[in-house]
Image (cartoon, rainbow, N blue to C red):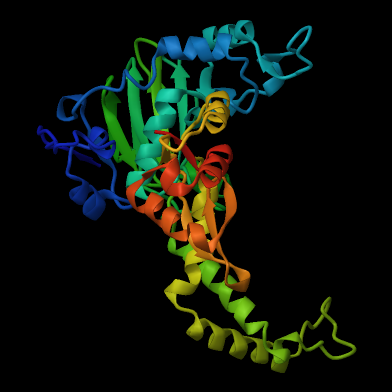
Amino acid sequence: MTTTSPHRVPTGSGGHSVLSRLVAVTPTDFAERYWSREPLLSRAADLPAGFGDLFSADGVDELVSGRGLRTPFLRMARDGTTLEDRTFTRGGGIGAAIGDQVSDDAVLHHFSEGATLVLQGLHRTWRPIIDFSQTLAGELGHPVQVNAYVTPPENTGFSDHYDVHDVFVLQIAGEKRWRIRPPVHELPLRDEPWTARRGAVEEAAQNEPLIEETFAPGDCLYLPRGYLHSATALGGTSIHLTIGVHPWTRRQVADELVKTALTRASRSPEMRLALPLGTDLLGEGPAPHDVEAVRAALLEALQQVDAGDLLAGLAGSAQAAQRPAPLAPLAQAEAANALTETSRVALRAHVAAVLLPAAGGRTVLRSRVGTTAVERTDLAAIEGLLDRGTATAAELGLELTRTLLRSGVVVPA
C-alpha cells in the first residue's frame, strides 16, 4: 500500500471535487496508478478537509433511535459473526404493524457487549451522504453505496475477508487498526464472494499483513476489490464510512455483447431449427454438428456487433444502478399546478436523461425515472433542455413542462 507524501490537492475555480476529498494525489495519478490496482492511504493532513460534514456519532444515534429503521438498513456483528436480526429488532407497537423495527435498547445492549453496528444504505437514508455519493458516482462513472461501521473500543466486528467491489474507507471518529493482505483471488466479480474461498482467506489471514496502520479521523483508504482486510477499534468508539464502488467491468461489456449477438443470430431460421427427434439432453446432449452450427452463427454475429450496438443495453444498466437526486413530492406537485410561462425548470440532478429512437420512427426521453414519448414538435425544446440544463415553461410549452415536473425529470429552478 502507498502512503502519500504530504501535499495538498490543488483546487480549481469550482473548489475540490468529491474525489479530491478522498485521495491526496491528482485524479489523473489516481486513475493511472491506483484505480483497481493498488491500495492508497491518504492522511488527514494531506486532504482538503475532514469528513465531519458527512456523518457523526449524533447521526448514528438519530438513525437508530429516531428514524424507525428496519432491517436490512441495520445489522450487527461480533467477532466475525453476524447477529440474527431478531436479536436487535422489535415490533413497532400500536399503529405500526411492523415486526422488524430496530430496537434502540437492544442495540445498546449488544453494542455494550462488544458488537459492531452496521448502518447500511446511507446513500439512501442520510441526506449529506446521498448528495456526496451521487456526486462521487458521477465523477467515477461507477455506482456507489455507503455503509457506516460503528465499533466499540478494543473490538473487531468482522474477521479477514475481501469485498467484490472497491472501497473508500473514511475514518469519522475514534481510531482503528487496519490489517491489509494481498488478494487470494484477483479482481473478484460480483458473483465471486469471499465465502466461496473461505479456506484460502482463512489461511492467508495467518500471514503477516502487507500493511498494518492505525487510522485517525480524517484519514481515507482506497482499497481495490479482492484485498483482504480486517480492523480493530482502539481506545474509543470507532466510526468509519465505507464507500463501496461497484465497478463496471469488461465482464459487463461481454455480457451485453453476447446478449446482443444472440439476438442478432436468432434472426436466422437456422438458429431456430428444432433439434432432431430423439435428442437426449439429459445424457449425451446435443449432436456435435448442432453445437458447431450454433457456434458458427454466434461467432458471425459477434463479429457484426460494434460498440454502438451495446449503448442502449449498457445505458439501461447504468440508469438502473443509481437513483436521481431526491426531490420534494409536495413542492413538486405544487410547482406543476402553479406553472406559468415564466416558470424556469432545471434537469433533476443525476436523472441521466437521454433522447433515444423508438419503434415507428418515434423518439422517447429515457431517464432514471422512466420513459416519456416525445412529439416531433417538442424535440428541439427537449434537446435544448438537455444541452443547457434549464429552460422556461414558455420554451418547453406549459403541458410538456408540467409532464416533466410530474414525472420528476425536471425540478423548479
